Every structure is written in C-alpha cells, then in structure tokens.
Amino acid sequence: MEAYKKGVPFKELNARIKKLQNILVKKDIQGILIIQKSDFFYFAGTIQQGWLYVPSEGEPVLIIFKDFERAVSESDLNIVISLVSPKKIPETLNKMGYSIPKVLGMELDVLPVNLYLQYQKIFEKSKIIDISIDIRLIRAIKSDYEIEILRNAAAMADKVSEKVPEFLEQGKTELEFAGQVEGYARSLGHQGIVRMRLWGSELFYGHIMSGKSASIPSFLASPTGGFGANSAMAQGAGFNKIKKNEPILVDYVFALDGYIADQTRIFCISGISDEFLKIHNVMLEIQEMAKNKAVPGVLAGDLYEMMITMAKDKGCEKYFMGFGDRKIRFTGHGVGLELDEFPFIAKGQKTVIQKNMVIALEPKAIIPEKGVVGIENTFLVTENGLEVLTKTNNDIVIL
Image 1 (cartoon, rainbow, N blue to C red):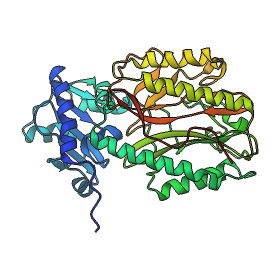
Image 2: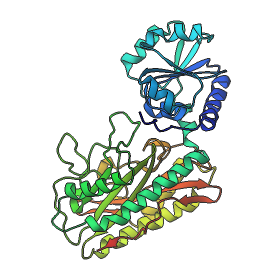
Image 3: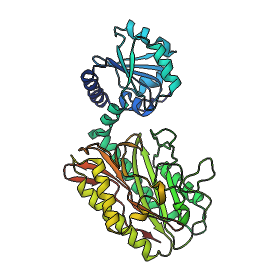
Image 4: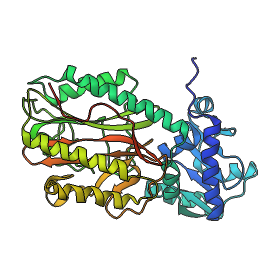
C-alpha cells in the first residue's frame, strides 16, 4: 500500500503541545482530552477517530479507535496506541504510568451534552472543565510552518479568482457557474471541506451570487446569504441566472492542507452603475484603513468600531455588513484550520491583535433588491500592520 501522507512534523507538534502544557500547569489542570477534529489535527497531525490525551507534564498519548495503522503513519507523536472503547481510557492511561487527573480539560464549546455526560462517568474521579478558549487562543497565533501553508492557500485562492472570468457567462445559472469554479479549485488541490466551529454553521466552498439574489439574507453568520439550491441549504448559489450590468459576488474559501484562505471579488458583465462603483470604492478605503490600524496591541473590538465609524462617515452605514435589524456585528475574523477562528473583528471583542495572527477582513455593502459589493482578503498581522496574502486586483472586474 502506498504510504499515507504525513500530517504535521514532530517539531511543530511538540511546540504546540508545550504551549498547551504551560497553560495546564498555570491553571492546575492535570490533563486534557482532545476530541474535536480541528483541535485533534492541530495537536496530533491526524484526524483519524480517537482521543488525544495531553498531560500537564510528559508525553501526550494518541489513542486511536479507527484507523490505527493510518494514524501511526500520519502522526509524528511518539506514543500512539489502539483502543476500542473510551471506557478503557482511564485504566489504559493508569497502566502506562499516568495518574488520573483531578481536573480534566475538554472542549466544552463543541462537545455534545450526551458525550459530556458519558465522559463524566468514564472519568468519575475527575472534575471536567472547559479548555476550549485556551486552545483557540494558542491556535490564533500561527507558526512559520502554518504561515507558509496559508501563503500557499492564498496563492491558490488567487488562481481561482483569476480563472473566474473564463467561466462567467450571461444566462448561466449561479449553480452552474459555481460548479465550474469549484471544479477548477478542486484541480488545484482544494480539500473540499471547509471547517467551521460555530454550532449549526456549515459552508460549501463559499458564496457565489449575482445581482439581487446576493442581497437575500440567510441563517449563516455572514453578511451575504443567497437563495441556495433549496430551503435545506438556504445559502449561496441558486438557480438565478447571471445577467449583464449587475455585481457578481465570488466569496470563496481555498482550503489547502487543512488551512483556509478567504477571499471575495466582485465581477460584472458589460458594465456596472456608478452607485455600485462608488460604494465599492468606500469598502476598499475601509479595508485600507483597517490594514494600517490592525497593529499588535489593538483590541479587535476597537478595530471593528473604526471600520463602522468610517462606513458611517462615508455615508454607507445603512448597508454596511447587511441591512435592517439583523446586520452582522463583525467586519472580519481569524482563519486557520477553521473559517471562524480568533480573533473576531466584532463589537465588544477584547481579544488583542497579535503578531502572526491571520485575519480575513470583509467590508461589504448589501443593497436590498440590488446586490452586494465589497472586498475580502486574508492578511497576516505584522509589527507594522497587515500584510495581504490574497493579492489579485481588488477593483470590480468588468468583462
């Protein structure tokens, strides 16, 4: 059998685990059991089904239910064992010389209640507490290894954006157009799955919408919605046909080797109104301001207020990040293994912007019954502000 592709190098995994163990020691947490897929991959280098036990001191133990051989091949961790039931975890750890933790950390932001109750019975001598915020804050600061993958993902996002005009055609449905764009992205190595942490949130590549269909609201925590293929999906591309002289939104994620680059560009066929051009240019100005202001030490909530204030000063407040009572209260978000990582550029957020965070800024204007204009790029936080990773032209592309 051909060898499985290695996940994450040991040096990288070890650095991540050491950061986590430092937090466990400071908080007097004796161990943590990691289950959630993105966190599991981040610390173990594989997403095979199982559990990762990280003690406050000593080697982590990767416990695999399925598939053990693949996990051994993919993960660079030193201790990988096979186990058929979570009920045997405490006994197994004990036999390996690990004490059962008095306090056990778990990802309670995403762990279903029934599983939580199950683990309470399994670790009956342990107090289970939430460790999810600490994990997410560790993940928010990207290593050089991660940044390199994110740069590659951004380069692939640029390739997709550059290819879009070849597929864009009057009379074609949004779904047909989306399928062609997605097929090209897949040929470049797009992994298909776009992971999100927020409960009940899901995304398929992103949003492609044209004209007024782009202004249709949806359930998703996003400024854009769209009809979607049906009411069971209720977002993104639908059966609306692409027309001349209307903005066509291509808000797509490129997911490469687990990591996500987020990008939005606006296209149109023939021409577009001065109203749309004017508002789009304001969105570019807001992005440029935020790019310079997002230096280490700034609060994420303060950056949000700067962007909101500028939209108001430029006369675009009414449609900025949505319209009506259900406007989205954010203007950007962290990206990495998931689309909704820390920091959130959102109202009231106290997270401090730090060097090597990776952020997607997305100033957009949603004009009811007309369409959407705006921009989204993925940026790396540097000491002097944001370095753009997605580099194609930000202007509206007129075909």
